[in-house]
Image 1 (cartoon, rainbow, N blue to C red):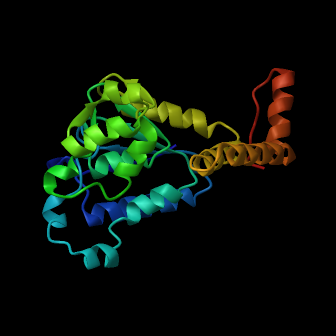
Image 2 (cartoon, helix red, strand yellow):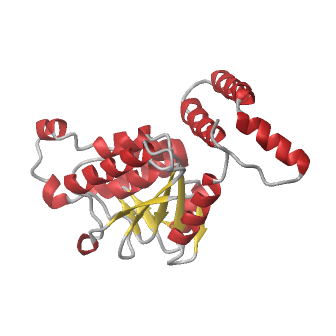
Length: 244
C-alpha cells in the first residue's frame, strides 16, 4: 500500500497548482510502479482538502487555465489503473470533493463533510463535480447541493452512495489503509479487470456493459492467477498471486 498526503494545514490543504501538480506526479509515478497495488490519498492536519486555493485562482484567465493545465491532476487520477482510496477527515469541499470522487473508494470520518460550494464564488465546479455527483447521488440531490453551495454530512453522503464506508473520527486513514492492504492481496489481473469494466461500463448501454464484463471474465481464465486461486480454494489453502 502506498499513501499520498496533501499537506498544507495552514490552508486546510487547499489545492494550488503546485500541489495539484505534485499529486499528479506522485500518482502517475505510483501507477507505473508494479509494487503499488493500491494508493490511499488523504490530507494532513484533520482535513482532507477544503477546496481550491481561491487566492491563486481568482486572477487566472481562461487561457491560463488551458496553458497551465489546471485540471491535470484530475486527468491523471481519472486515468490511474491502480485502485485509489480516499481517506477523508474533515472537509472535502470544491476541488477536494472532486479529488475524492476521482477515487474508486471513499472512506470518510463520521465528522467529514462534502460539498461543491463554487456557486458562492460566482463559478461552478470545473473538475467533475457536476457530472460525478449527478451519476452518484442523482439529479435532485445534486441540484440542491450545487445551487445552494451547502455541504453534506458524511452520514448523508454515505446514505446517498457518495461515501463507501464510514469510520469513527480520526480513523478514516487507518480503515482506508486496511482496505488497501486487503485489495493489494487480491489477484492483480482481476483487480485491474474490475476497475476497467466498472469504469467503461458506467456510461454505456447495459447490454454493452454486460458484454465487456463477460469478455473480461473469460479472458481471466487464461491467467495463472485464476488457476492458482481456484486450486487454492479447492485445496483449502491461501493462494499466492503473481499477476500472471
